[in-house]
Structure formats: C-alpha cells, structure tokens
Length: 498
Image (cartoon, rainbow, N blue to C red):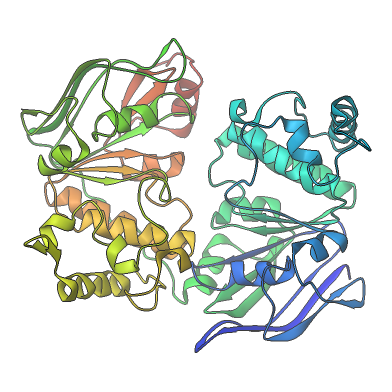
C-alpha cells in the first residue's frame, strides 16, 4: 500500500471535523473522496499535506510511519497538492512558476535551463504547456496543467486534486481526465476531491464517502452509482426536481446594443441585446472568457458600458452605481464569491448583510439582533456549517460561503436576480436546495438571469438559453429544443442546424 491513514481524528475545540477516518491509496490508483460541504474532506487533506496536525491517528507511506510538520515535509515524502484556487504568480512565466523553490543556477536564475527542464517534464508526462507564456495570459485549463507539472517537478508520487474541475470548460475537463489517465499509467496516484459525481465515476477507481466527519462508505466505482453515492453523502435519497412550465410576463431587464471593452482593443461585449421577463429563467451558456463576466458587471453596476442601455423595470440605469442598481430591484450572486461576494475578515452575520445593509439599519447602525436572527435562519435552511453568526467568514469552507451568499441574495425578494455560477463548489444536497429556491423565485414572479459553466445546470433550470461567443449572442434556444450538443456547437462558434 502506497498510503495508509488510520484512525485520523481532528478536533477544533468542541467541533470534531474528522472522526476515526481510515483511508488508503494504491500505486497508480485514483481514489476519490466525496461528501457534503463541511463533511471533513478538506480537513483530512490538510492533515495529509502537513497544513494541519491530527488530534489522533497515524499516517504511513509505503508502510513507514510519517509525520508532517508542514507542506515541505509532505513534499519530501512525495505528496503534492493542487488547490481549488490556484497558487500561481500571475506575472511570472509558466517555467518560473514550475521551478520556483528549486530554480536552476548557482549564482543567479538560469532561465534557459528552467525552460529546458519544463519542456522535458512536459514531454515526459504528456502535459503540454508553453514554458515562456505568462500565467496571466493562460486559460484556467492551462494554469491547472502548470499546477500539476509544478508538483511533478517537486517529485510527487501522490497528487491531491481539490475540486479540480470547478472552473474548467467541458473541453478542459476532458483534457484533465486524460492527463490523469496518462499519469496513472506511469505509476502516479491521485486523491480526487470533487462534488461532481459523474466526473468522479468516470475518473476514480475507488470512492470514499464522508458525512459529518465520518466514513459512510468505501466503494469500487464499477459497483456503485451516482444515486448510491448521493444517498451516502446526504443520508437520504434526493428528490426529483419538479419544474413547471414558465409563465413569463412583463419585461424586467432590457439590454439594448450593449458594448463593453476589456483589456484588448476588441470589445469583450459586442452590441448585445437581451431581455428577461418576470416569471422566467434565462440562461447564458458560453466558454469562459467570451464576455459573460463583462456583461454581468455592466448590468449590475460594477462597470460602465462603452455604449448601449440597461433598463430595470422600465428605469434606465445605464452607467449607474452598483447601489443604484440594487435600489432599482437587483440582487446578484457573483461568479467569484471571494472577489465580489464577501470579506474574509468579516463575521458570518456581516457577510449576510453585504450589499443590503441599509435595509437592516436604523440611523446608520445595523440592527444586530435582527441580522443575527435572519442569518441563523439561513444557516438552518441551507444547512450552512458556520457555527455562530459571530464566527469569521474566513473559517467557512468555499461551499458553505457560497450557500451563505446565495441565501443572502435570494432572500432580498427583488424583481431581478443575477445568478452567476450559483452552485460552484457546493455539494449535491446544497445544489438541490439552491435549484429549488431559484425555481421558487421564478414561480413567484421573479426574473432570473443565470450564467453557469455547467451545461447540465443551464439545461435543467433555464426556460430560454442564450449562447455567447466572442462577446456576441450567437444563438437562442427554447427549453424544449436545447440539447448539450446544440449548445456545445454554438459555444465554439459553430452554426446551428435545424
């Protein structure tokens, strides 16, 4: 056995994150770990990577007991970790990021040698990158390859992938899974942490399920199903979603000939027109980087468009501030929860009021009791593992923070909601809850603009689907006619047939 973790427990005061967990990994194996947000997956991996110390239990590498005081110890034992949020220097080149800490050259950095090493590494493992490219210019799929090559350069035999497909396009997901298959054939072993059960089923040899810090099952992938994994994760069968036909009414959002410039000379959003009616969900599908982010920023008041108009409930709000957009009837689940949705240093209660704090203020002071009572209700309704509303936001897992932001924005009962990547990083039980709440808002007459990198989510929730490619709307499909194949073709610039 390559790795064996036995009886791992971890306590944070009265909270027990891991309870007597056993886990093992064989050479050339992909052994996935799945579970709801707060089930203990990340804590277990932080212990394995030397970022946390266990309260009890042992770790053995190839039969010998090992102790990791920090990640450097884990790396010396052949363990590498690719984090959910990439840890790369954006202005450095690919080669510089990969060799950092083990740079070639005695007196000064030998750039040519670094490029040669990365080219050889890339060739050896079949993971193609341009060592001279700057990270800031690389798509997210390429950045992930750089992270994997970085841990391979450090000599990793065991590679931990934490939510590796959360920000990838379907094509990039396929490339990642192919890279994993190639590396396992060369003897590398993977620990895969993911909420996406279909991807786990296609990539893993075995799956360990955690719930409330305990193991509820260790299964051979060939002998289980998504339904069984879901039941072991949440402790109950998941209900089928009951989506009734939409009954669209008056226009709530109307965008006309909107253009937004990004960093280049070509507009990121190029003369886009669209509308969303009360009582419908309009989905926007598109490969990341085709103008969706810039469009959302312009119709939420975060940036000003170069031309065109944005109207909410008949009021022209073009170029107004984010506060004025909110006053006009907007709520916004942002695509990046850390950049736009929260402040890590704030309390959970404070994060629960951000953007809407004036509604819960008197004479400029927040009504503390009312805020905490409201946030406590959300914690129960969305099963947010946050402890007290007084706890710091930075102590929440990414999935639990996402649930808090979703709860905050849906609770505003505004006429219009932007839902950008609403289920990014959440578990299957939370996804079910969020989808139910979005449909309930629609059925109550709300207008929702949904942007998601998950085509399954777009297809499941949308009444109409718009496709963006190179800053333009290149297609519109009704719910009944949309398929993943038709959307994928439009997303890469193909023409729709029939």
